[in-house]
Figure 1 (cartoon, rainbow, N blue to C red):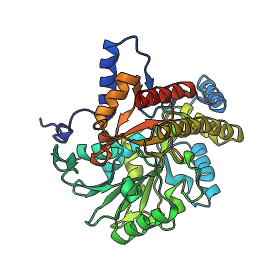
Figure 2: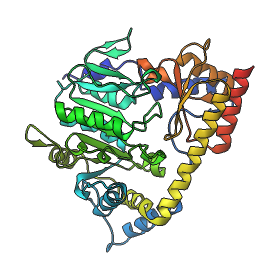
Figure 3: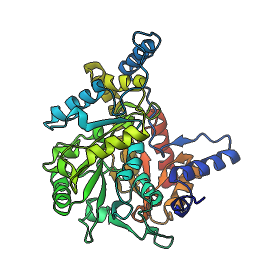
Length: 407
């Protein structure tokens, strides 16, 4: 028997596992420390009443033979797919049909599973810094080549620096690539691409035959007019893009688990429909998201549900401003935080590298962040903070950082 050798190529542990390990080790030595977590992007506000009511009603349905639900459609229930098509697309002037939407147990799963559709010899392009799931799932599938610990790069991955030097707008590849991962609003930087900037990528993909894998998990945080909530707002995207969407940050479903992937029927390569391929993949490997969870997800598209989730998002947006303003008050250069729940902060001079500063904040301020180096070579010299914490705890965390850096 032979195991998948690509798993053995992954260096160290998953980024957030290492963060959790360091936190646990410190807490074991200092049980009295009152830690504030601004690292992992996990929400803290409870599910809104409209969602809870819908889930309760669905649970009650499961208690009666007349309304009990067994296996549901692998693609998702029509009531949720239709609501997404209407509210997230049609109301934005985008023609996406309900049957082009596939409901899942979260965008992370789909971001990892989508690589099933593509040959192992495809060249992958990722922004640098990058959400680690995009990269690690391709390592596991044998597309990444060999890892160089000196550079922190994989030999067969095309890295697109996305930094302050280029305004967080990656340049078009100078070498042929097949799959292009783009996240806007971006994780980890919290920065965005405008409609015009995304059009450049859509035109490039259509002209070369590449496919854009677009992560729109944070689109509900967009407040600026010229920043698309979906790549399908960009003309031509339906023939070159797949989009991942999430209820985790939109509606607090990090623990409930629900998301969707949008694959237009117009997306065809070598005469093969990627929509049909994904449908075949899902019907083989996935039995569908929970009916109860899907009923809860559909509730955010009611007037009351919409109002309630936007109140929660406003809560996190206020947290982002508190973090941004506090760090800027310390003289730290800050990016993101406007259209995003993430704050990307440049480490002050003399504070070492990303992991050094992470450890300093952990041990001296008892604040947990995420080191930028964990997101790729271009993330070195930065930390990421999230706005998903409790409001008072967030203010306290910022006050602790200010005291530490001003002393």
